[in-house]
Amino acid sequence: MPEETETLKRYRDGQKDYRLKLRFIALLLIAGNTGTEIVAAAVGKDIRTVETWYGKYLTHGPDALNSFQYQPKRCFLSDDQLADMIA
Image (cartoon, rainbow, N blue to C red; front, top):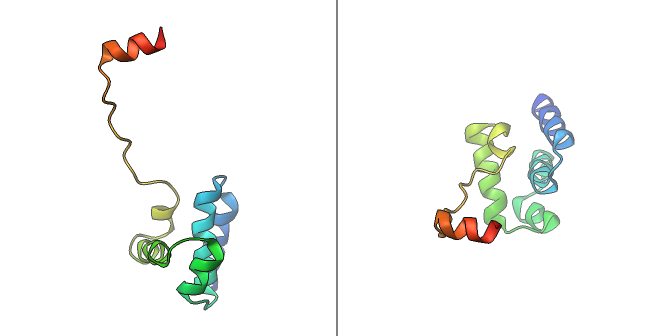
């Protein structure tokens, strides 16, 4: 596990976005045998969120947590409406 801990530390230290850095902090706490409930309280997140992060880490590795995996919503304005707003 020391090798995994070092990997998590590298990801944590290399991350500029604090929200993503928080994920690796949570995983490091879990790696240190801190329970998920305590970790969730420490990082200010719901326990389900921390469990989701941990599950993604276990199944897909640290790269799965190193970016936001969501798709932006599509714009409901037409091209003409967008052009009017920009002009």
